[in-house]
Length: 194
Image (cartoon, rainbow, N blue to C red; front, side, top):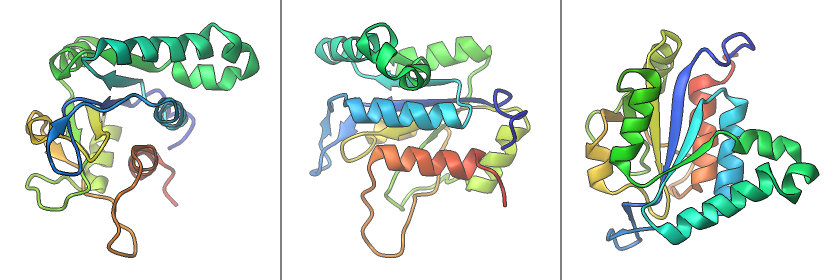
């Protein structure tokens, strides 16, 4: 992606904390982490993403979120490392998927194409990265959903329009951190082509 293309794309990310799965495939809510917010926001800023939404209905988690942002945007962290605050300015909080979809639709004045990410391979409606990349640079708006814990609940996947292919490595181990997955996905979709 060239310098001129940054800011032309209409892309948002959402980090879903509820509903997600635990290792037993049960629906749970997961905790917000400082590392996820920092690292995904930095990747989002690097690749020209408009906003990173954090989705959780839990008020204590929303308070933690606000404290973290206040520290880096207004508190000592803003003086200590302004670059981190610059990335964290992209981050917003939502109570649930409905509120997320409403906000993004209102912002772009259209409902974006919503694509989930998932490490599991048995899904229909998988859209290949080159096709999605082409659609992005043709001006289509997208919202990419990333799951915490052991991944997105099926109801979240079904609320979207498709799924990106899983990220696979050389072996059978397939349990990337959401921070790593987000960076890889962004590079595949928006990174410079060699």
